[in-house]
Image (cartoon, rainbow, N blue to C red):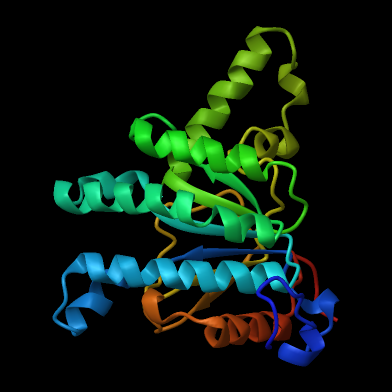
Length: 253
């Protein structure tokens, strides 16, 4: 696995799998930053800082595997309830990340997509978010959905409002509304539904994340805390996914 950071991985070499066995879209609930720091008698912010390195490593690995999409649950709509000092730090860290990672994003042909509500995010974060999204818009590699100020219930409410506005404008008939209509009205309209949902730190909750989109996703829970999540852990999750039999409500083979 040596060579330039943007050199493609051969899934047969690094995973022992054929490309068709890989998930198209991986979604990750990144949990355990605070516990990682507490275990080391460090401030919580140290866990968040270390977590950024994990984000960088996993994003690059997914890009090199030539996956279609990766969605990262970075800041939920409920996270505003945390202490102001921590929230302010997370927003500043997010802003710095959006600036610092632009070169890596472009080198790996990654397209960044924001998933979540803009309302409530600081102007300084929105400025850098918009700049990175615009810069990477023409990239054709991995699509990275950054779930920032995201909540699935909020997303569904916003989708319903969009559909109602279309009906009121005469663009859409009530009898034309179906699952496709809803999917195309979500923040994730440009992404396929996740095939694999990974949650770290031994937590068995969905936490208001992609409730519509993960209807048939395979779930993988690991006891690894997010700051320690590396390519070996990612590859273990993908291998576990490849062993699953996905029936989508039908009968197995």
